[in-house]
Image (cartoon, helix red, strand yellow):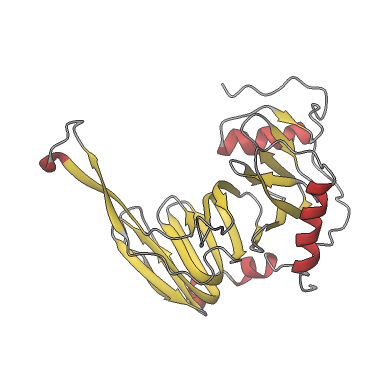
Length: 284
């Protein structure tokens, strides 16, 4: 695998926007470097069939089929590599500015696995200590009725999962979510995972395991995670992707993935057309 040329890819994003590249999102914050085997972008109003160069924005969900894979670059130089049968949503995103020196990047891993290398956002700023969040169990606001529902740290960068929130102070890490288990492997830097039961922090060469919704995150050896094959498949390239071959039928891809993850959606090509002239899929 060739090493990624980050400077070239950042320029590519800027050039695409300057040239008036069309995209459906309200806020363009990144661009796909590769899209193989079936990749979709679910936007607030529609779902696009993705390809290399597709722009992504806040509110978009990036989805892969069971044979799909994709890599993308965010405008703060952070990079992502997502495995097959996975989904990730961009919740919030803002570059550092005069009013927010650290910026903000919030993502949700819906399922599957993703590897990411931190960019400017969250690179040098540690997350604050986790704070308990409470909710009224009976609908009445009274201290005796409050139950603890989450313990999430606040910081510029957060990756939410079904069982924990992951934060980092500059890291190259992989998060894999399968059933009721989440595994985090840190390749460089450090990352922390927190939930209602507590927190765990792993440094380079270590991992974190959360084995159930109420289980406290625990530091584990990288060997015990059994993620070597996954890590190899998520290695970053220079963004040069071969032409997609044996591409599954577009609408079938959309229905298969969204039916399982999001409950269906209106599937369209990036130009707004229905990929195979079939009626759009109803979310119902």
